[in-house]
Amino acid sequence: MLTAFARAFKTPDLRKKLLFTLGIIVLYRLGAHIPVPGVSYKSVQLCLDQAQSGNNLLGLANLFSGGALLQITIFALGIMPYITASIILQLLTVVIPRLEALKKEGQSGTAKITQYTRYLTVALAILQGTGLVATARTGALFSGCPAAANIVPDKSIFITLVMVVTMTTGTAVVMWLGELVTDRGVGNGMSILMFISIAAGFPGALWAIKKQGELADGWIEFGIVILVGFAMVGLVVFVEQAQRRIPVQYAKRMIGRKSYGGTSTYIPLKVNQAGVIPVIFASSLLYIPTLIVQFGGGGKSGWGTWIQANFVDGKPIYIATYFLLIVFFAFFYVAISFNPEEVADNMKKYGGFVPGIRAGRPTAEYLSYVLNRITWPGSLYLGLIALVPTMALAGFGANQDFPFGGTSILIIVGVGLETVKQIESQLQQRNYEGFLR
Image (tube, rainbow, N blue to C red):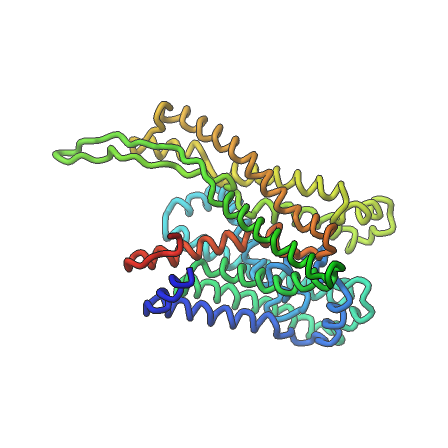
């Protein structure tokens, strides 16, 4: 693999793409450490030292921003607004005929949907930036920290507007950097930035486990976590690459003196067809009760006390609800993202059929049957992977951002595999040995 990287750097166009991508990554990480105007850097660092880095309410957004959210930097919102906007538009494509028609128009329709995604990203950035600034002004961003009320010393309307505009502009810049990487770099730009954001928290999370350990000054716990990490990466790679291949044959057709078709191919149905989306949906939905209690003033009521006591990591009700939501959203997302009837109609239109299955409705029913069967192990796998941080919290005293589990490991491995495949395909076009020898 290192030899292949060396050969990639010896290829002029690949070297330019890799260096350009590295330059964008450096700019992104630099922006993640520049504080927003109007924020007391000293107070933020004091609260970060006292509080756990895994905030139960903002932990997911902080993970996707590479820790920039809780430090209130210009890239505090990171790529979370873009991810949310992309998911919303993908869901709306199923229910809004206009968006579905744009999706079928090809490149021009995709460009239009991308433009809508940008507009929605900016709107969500304004909304999330306002919420973050309001939370920081009231001191609720770091509950229990005496200096939390001094994070924003000047609480005037002008300073608040400057902070919201700065964060929104930072989100637009991050979106632009991601599109630059996609056009002129290696891999998908937004995925690369997401990869870097999550990977940036690995060293700190691992060192925190070592410092909190008791056996051999924490080195034994540290070694166990590393071994568990290798096992988790191997498991995720195995399942992410697993797929059920539905054979498809195309009938031979004679047009004039030429014959067309007569080929065999397959439809790859992945075991984890939904990817990391169900985990994000379930995590976001579980934050809503805590959000209502925290900002709705229901902390002293009976239901508010029950939510604060049971909807926290490690509690059986929280774990069971989280697991069931992931399984539900896995089936939900697969149902709206893969349409067996549309696939069957396209196959029938071009003369394709599954051996032993009649074309048309029987093919759609067969694809739906197979998809439901392979989604069960995929959803259970997602639920178990997502619960790894909770088990680490109980076993090693790790924080919510435990590196080898949940959303982080799924994104790290998924983006890594896709980027390696793209570099390998470009190497193989030049008759070089690839990564997967």
